[in-house]
Length: 179
Image 1 (tube, rainbow, N blue to C red):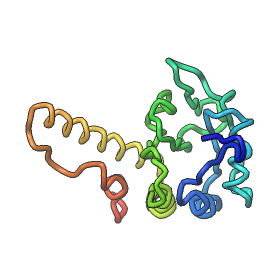
Image 2 (cartoon, rainbow, N blue to C red):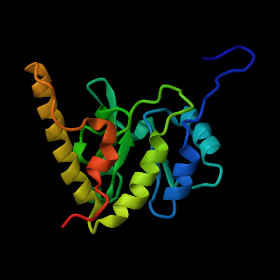
Image 3 (cartoon, rainbow, N blue to C red):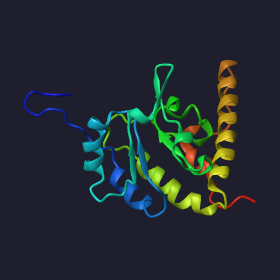
């Protein structure tokens, strides 16, 4: 919150520098935010002093739909089959839902591990697949079907079967390559 003396202060989500450092050699990293450039540019500079971020896209590059800023990857001049959007709001990638990966919203906790887990997930597990995005989409669809089944069981008053989303990476990306 702003104060007259200190102005706005922002806290970095744990793991952001590690994520950028680990993934920059493997991926083209683009920050695509619904914030304005005036707000986001200095924040990106502070979390990325080494220049790992290749491009920065701001609110003016989003589409405003149904009260939300939506990231339309069809406008990126990149093969959409090779793009993964990471955001904490599913609405942000609703135009291409199978290209999206929703992270839990950060509550400000210093114990948060989401970005460390994401870096490990993208770094090690994507390397196991010949077509990483196709495998991601296939496994995401499977996970969504399991979640729908779990919700239906809860609605019927049954005890849900199987695991919940807590083991997301392990369920999306098994340790051995699938045949």
